[in-house]
Length: 262
Length: 153
Image (cartoon, rainbow over all chains, first blue to last red; front, side):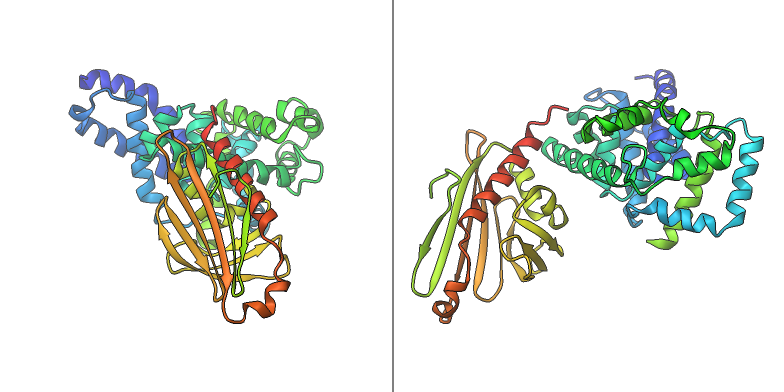
């Protein structure tokens, strides 16, 4: 493959690579750095790329290895991360001042419930063991096949199936217990609270019924609701959406809180 | 040992041994991971209330079973041969799990627990039968491992 063709193809993959890295690191800065390092490493090693996998799989492999080096040194988050970070935010007027400023001035400062759903999933997925988190994102959001994921994270297909199954099961269960959008008894109402802060004139219930996952909550089974949650996440680019600046600010806050907490 | 998922118990004066064996159509790595991931047990195994600790050689774990929900069994992992053999136990008893991969892709899962000692005759009557719990354990493991193996998603 020529460097020109590689550059062209890299450009096509880099957006997805960056969003994947954001979702597994919870850091826009780290995601950007790792995308850059992936480009450097891949272009240096381009002569070793024999097309045994797709270029996209190869790039995700390099990026995942770089991210794993970074993530293995860090502790995993906890599944009630959003409760803990909410408490911290409530005691920190600066957090809301910054958020309101972004909301008022940024073209990507809107608060959108769907965007918050993806933000929430990013945070809670960091409570999964790393391999489970990687497998869930690679399969459910970036649509890699099991054999491709085995290549990317350097394990067997059997283990990918195990990580996927257990990761999905845990996340399904966590959201079934927590998320008030799909369970009336759910303990987490952050998206309605934040919608009230940033969109005070909006009627939350009218917005919620626009979301298929919430509409299906009463009669959808847990697995189906998880799939609908994944559908929302797949459709959103966390760097490009109209709510990106606000959600990246929230993510930055949660990462700082978790770095001190875990 | 018959691979029919039926438990058998052999009683002797100073010991009691319960065994079960079943064929599982799954990669041994999946079965092994299920057997050695402590925190995940309650999700798939209806005979286990909780397992705390790290299932690795020499480590101590705390197990709560539906057979005696008020007791916490403090056990030590005594053998750990990857994807082949796992043993944990305490003073009077040891439980051994073995995986044996056959050429046809089936894995024979066996579980044996022997409890005994000089004092055994004095407390034997207080120990409930393990048969039903063993059968449920093996059935749960088979179902979970085969579900994961056959996932087409």
